[in-house]
Amino acid sequence: MTIATQDAVTIIRAHRTLEGEGFEVRRAIPSRAVPAVGPFIFLDHLGPTDYGPGEAKGAPTHPHAGLETLTYLLEGRGWHLDSLGNSGAMRPGEVQWMCAGRGILHDEGADEEFQRTGGRMHGVQLWINMPRGRRHEAPAYRHVRADAIPRLDHAGGYTKLIAGSLAGHHGPIATFAEPWLAHVHLAAGRETRLALPGVSEIGVYLMAGRARVAGTAVRDGELAVLPAGSVEVRLAADAPMDAIVLGGPPLDAPVIFHGPFVMNTKDEIHQAIHDFQTGKFGAIVKPSRSRLV
Image 1 (cartoon, rainbow, N blue to C red):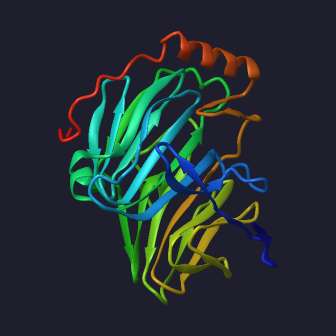
Image 2: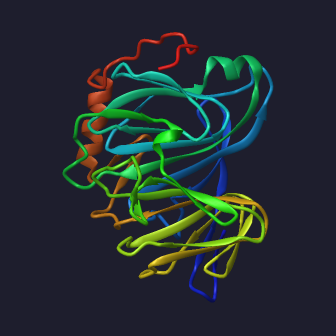
């Protein structure tokens, strides 16, 4: 559902869908009204979901090409495995970034400890567009610990800067697409402003709580897209809230989705499928999920 407000803020209600082995996500991007916000072409919100022992589901080995993925965890314990040989557990407040480039396989889900004990899982995964001419870069992976993400404290909350610059601080994730991304937490009745000059397109996705974005009411599971030309984000919490603020330069060319592949032309899609089917994405060797790296 899309609602255009008097302040020209566009509200997108994320729709529910199933992924991987059958876990539910709320998907805010892409939508008919908003196919992307800056370089962000995909936003899936997982949970918060409470799992019993052995109940957690994941996304077994699958391919990607022509994009970057960024996973940010608020609660739970995740696991990543890929065809470059990377593997490791993910704790709350951490980020896993992966450049699929010309092709990679990965496997993601809960780690062995979470599978054994159960618990609450809550996080987001975003796909970042790769500019034209960069989609065939070598694949890469990076795991960012929580203490490597700048935290800017303010009255009644904080902002964790994942990508881009804010008040002299720089997020640890820097990519070809120049994304801007932060997690903002506010206590009820508190507010903050983020000055984002030069960030062409800006959106705010509410992961929990209720807030006003540029004066417009937003609740959890909704994406607020600010008018073109906005240079700051005004956030006011009506209830304790956690939000993802995202943005950056607009897409440099139309994109074509084919499942986990994102390219600019059908020929590039056909090549990615061929490369995957002929084994050019490599293979995954699965170690124990209890090993932390």
